[in-house]
Image (cartoon, rainbow, N blue to C red; front, side, top):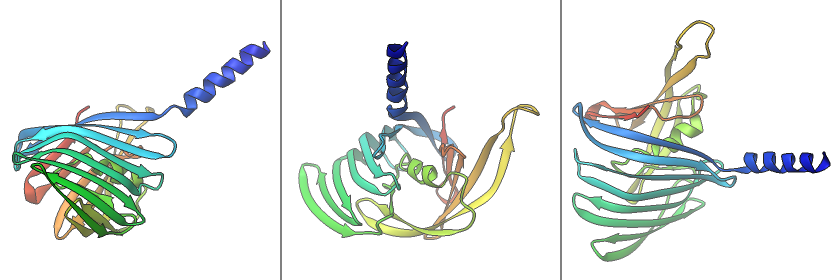
Length: 223
């Protein structure tokens, strides 16, 4: 009996310590035409979070994501970034390390390498241009808990840092029938340099959709 209890305790401890992993697919639409997809995994490892993604897009730019990897700490502050792929047919590879807002980038484009260093806000979100899966980190942090407008910052890696605001929009509840558990859906509105981005999420921080009206872009997570 004692051996059974010890084994049971070990099994439960192991199960609870296992990394939590979420997998998803994002479908990208431009002018209502499906033009690409991204597949991602979001993983908690006890020390922080890891986002990995791959995919491609044909419009409004031609983009190939062979591998994207973003490491964050428990406070969603980025620590490392890696991208390998191509933009408009030009191969690119970016390796970045971040510490207390200091970013060291190694950028390889068509076989040429250069290094660049920039200082950003310590809690800036890394949002590579034309890539949507990193928005997962944003909705994971705020979920449906945001009560008022906040001022934040995004590093459009490896180019420049841009301030933006984030505020909640009215939430909607949907459920199959009375008495069943309802799923809460909420919307967060980003305003970045006059461009509005609507993010749909829920209490679990699942990214459901991204809508950018001015660019005629819509990204929807597959069910």
